[in-house]
Length: 113
Image (tube, rainbow, N blue to C red; front, top):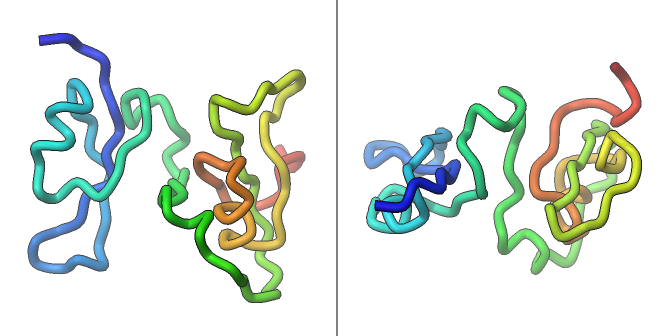
């Protein structure tokens, strides 16, 4: 077995609205689980505890509310980051995920540390 961990977002069999993060040893194991919705490369502990992953289909959304609750969208690994933080502040979680650049987001502005 090749160990290349992934962080899977899973749903509960009892409540499909409740999700959790589970580390699997590789994408094969994640895909075998009927509870896996999608996954990101790397173990879950390699992401901030309060990270919320953007669903891969989020880029298909056409509209977001204008409600202002800023989040820091952290770029996908395909985006070439030159200076940390490797992300951008968005007005809300919807805008972060439909941008197509964010892998996940954390609450607040990117520069507030």
